[in-house]
Amino acid sequence: MQITLELPDEIVRQLSVGQDPCRVALEGLVAEGCRTHRLSGHQAAELLGLDRYAVDGFLKAHGVYLDYSVEDFEREVEQGERLWKRQAELGGDRDLSDR
Image: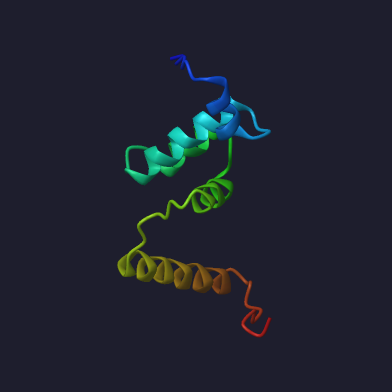
């Protein structure tokens, strides 16, 4: 879908200051979509042509922080521990904790 906006030139200059106005509008739309949970991180990455890590930086720069609970953290710790154990079983038994 293509969306066309009619905006006064002065406002466009104020909003885009040396940037592509279309990109500025797209980024604003994506940031608000993520802030209101109408867009996922994956969808944001697709729309902006960014990878997952770049989207995290983009959202942070726009003041959008993803919901991340204690349960999410604990789940990731458990997954990480399982991966470390699996790596050790496969012969990657070097101790990396002192790096």
